Length: 413
Image (tube, rainbow, N blue to C red):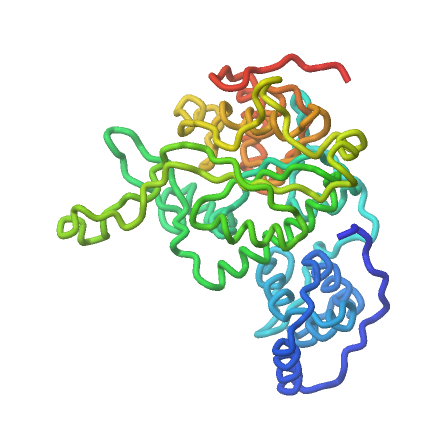
């Protein structure tokens, strides 16, 4: 996605009945459709509504008009974008009809965003990362280190409210165990075919959005889990990012290893699935501008920063669960320890130059890690409660002494 919005006049929507439209769409899908970049589909949908004066349109009308702008497009791409962004950006006026919320229509020329908070070399932006990043110019960032919502569902406004109440929803609020309260975990087994399809569409669009604002050769490190990492990897490579393997965080978690529910006595020697003892951080790279050495000279990216002259950056890092004392500084349900984050953040910029981006910054732990190793960073968070938490947490986490990478003095630039 090159960031330029297609200039289009009012789309020409054929006068055709719904039944015939459905038949034509199914025939086109049977012949094999061109899958347009997700960002293009989004822009085309908004162009269609803008041309229609923000009036409600049926899904079929939207699909045909988008196809008129982009050529044959997968019906699921249009429908998934509408479903994913309703009610946040669209409202369903009646069955099968949508219109955008007026305030959500993107401006033709948006002003660069302003951070709501700065701490050290970190800048925090408030809002949805798709909207915020659309206002940055291309080649704004040099790496991404982020722990995104694994299944989209768990950090929706509805599910976060249930988490904060401590009951119900996709979050499993576990009981105390050996005198210690276990942290809440999302139950990914509740994700059905529809949620998995939406997850794939989400990460394909996410990949296109970040690719536009990243410089060539930029590293993209995305936290995942063994149950969903293949979905995330497939979607991000579809968006044009190059897969570069994974960093394995060796850590004992509380996921898996349980006996069969309601039959734990009968099958006392059975674990339903292996106890999780690792966490994958998927590695991607925006395609290079020439050779690695050319990219390093021009963009300062294209590899990982070595640990020392003798030791390269490795893909297995021993870690521990986040300690209670650290959680007290930043009480976020998915907080990763600074001892681990500082290592991968430091490795993400091969020449220690550039800006590290976290589009799902949560409590700001990635930004704190970047501060600690002397890097410039930017974070985006849409949940206002987490934005307010970050204001307090980033300075505290930055100052935290760990047994991993120590805090470095800020280098003059």
